[in-house]
Length: 125
Figure 1: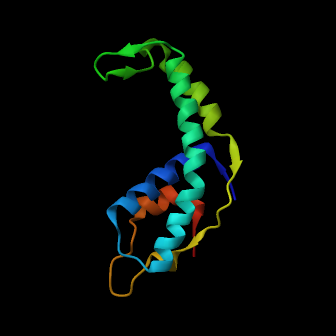
Figure 2: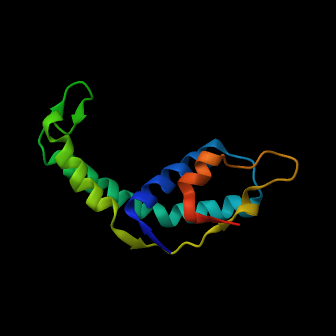
C-alpha cells in the first residue's frame, strides 16, 4: 500500500495509542493492528529522524524545552521543508483492516471516530 509520510506518522501514533490502551476488539483485530504497527514503525522512525535532523540543522537550543527547536524566525522555512518530506510516498506492506476487526457485538467499537479518520485508508468496510 502506498502512503505518504504524513499518513504513516499519523497512523503510527494512533495505532500505538490504541495498542497501549488495550482496547476491546476481536483477537483478529488485535493481531492485524499489531502487524500493521510493525510494518509502519520503521518508516515512522526514519521520518522522525529526518524531522529531528531538520530541527537540529538550525542549531537552536531551547532552554524552556531542554531540546533543539526551530527558531521563531524560521518556522515558515521549517514548515515548507517538512511539508515536502510529509508528501513523499512510500510503499508499506500493509493491507487495509476490515472495520469488523475492531467490533465486538454489544460493545462500543475498539476505536473512536477521530482515530478512524486518522487511520484513513488503512481501514476498509
